[in-house]
Image (cartoon, rainbow, N blue to C red; front, side, top):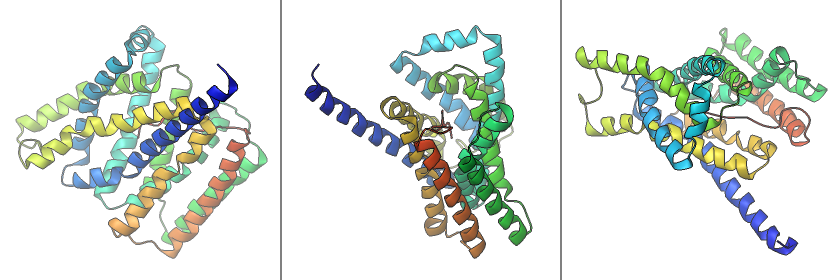
Length: 309
């Protein structure tokens, strides 16, 4: 193929990669709208539905993308299964905290958590994988710590929702980094491992007459059934984006998600954005600017490996 012929193809690939990245992080950014519509359902029950319907939806994606061999390979490796069981507990904790935060009107705290997640991931890489941190990355982590510390001093309480989301997802990424399972097969196995507990809980709710599904409105039932599609669709978009773009480029798109969540919190859910929030977010944004510049130049982490939010 000539250089002139390959250039348009490369441009088309980049354009489609940008579209997929915008789709993935944009959908994750508007997640609060979906979970806010389910605010009347207990967070644990929403989580159980998300697990069960994700198994079915991701199974269809595996068939469409012909990735069942990767699942079978992982099932033959005991160490991989144990690691996936650990990652399944971490992502379930992340999902549960996020679902609860949206229902409780704490989307602003959730967005802060996803802003600081890349910085916590960098710190975890240094602590557990002995990855080198450059001065600019240490400075970014320091600014993030200053922002969280300022909120602690001003409000007299830790922003635990933010810290729990950042810590659980960063720990999840750490576990997934050391096992060679793709995003879609990995999500399928994680939800499959959680499915027995989720089904047992939903069954108990049904027997006890406390199930939200079938006992309220058709709209609510459809929203619960859609949990699998809501979970799988942005992940599929993400996998297409990383195939077409540099990870450093994809990494810059990830800030669309917390930014969209922050805007929804303030302008749609009418959460109060105080001076304390302003100072904290300013510190985090400065930290992310430093981190992103470092990543873009190829110094250290080049971007997220997978996101299953």
